[in-house]
Image 1 (cartoon, rainbow, N blue to C red):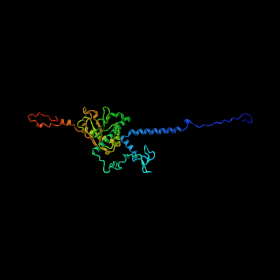
Image 2 (cartoon, one colour; image 1 turned 30 degrees about the vertical axis):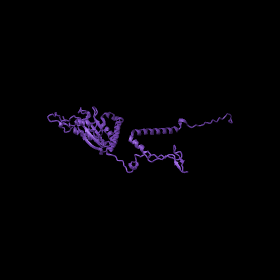
Image 3 (cartoon, one colour; image 1 turned 180 degrees about the vertical axis):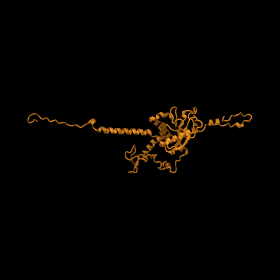
Image 4 (cartoon, helix red, strand yellow; image 1 turned 90 degrees about the horizontal axis):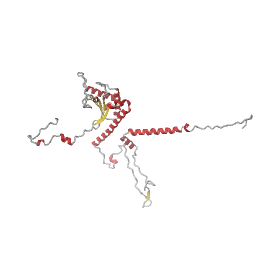
Length: 334
């Protein structure tokens, strides 16, 4: 196309293309789906880690079907599961008996019929003996105590301020229950010398202990212990008073950390009567606070063996020996 005055007009068409590739927004949707899936995955791993076997079984039983399922027997309802023409003519008979699945009893429905109805004998009920009940309670408590001990150790590892106090915490299980002890060390004590005012790190440690034991229903006893270092004569204040005051101070810290007051069953001061290190009565480890979660069913100490009984029992044939020939015997207490 030419201008009237000469020259050529050039028309250039420019196509505007939309942003593509990484300039688009489709990747954001895919990335959001990926992050959501990863969050759900790690949440599942966390739930598997923190739940016990009993809780996992309860969750599995919650989603288990509670209604009997009937397999389909018409048409191609499985291997040899169809119907064929019988001898009487148009009547049909099953080539295979229908399979009935037994209903699964859910743990969340303990009141749906008694054991006799589920077992097919309505007149028979399941009776639980006292020994079986005590065994079940003991097993449940052992699982709870093991979980509490694990949580205490994890708390000591995860809190930087408490890592230095790891040696001051002793956890073991006794016939009375789970015993948690806050023990003094050579250069790290829970209390100042001859004082019942707890140090600040010890208060934080007591708060962690209170959070763990508050999750369990057991009653709690708090016992204070001291070493055998005597007080000056004439002061009127000794290890008995000091151990009792320290046990009371520990009780107050447990309550301040959120523990229910009704859980406290006993607060005792034992002075130096039950040392942790008997061979060294003045050892700093003898100064401690003992917190015991009492068992619902205390474990009795094992009975002495037959050999021990026969060794400690007096001889039964001593009376048959004539007095003149009877050898001299020492008293058992000597």
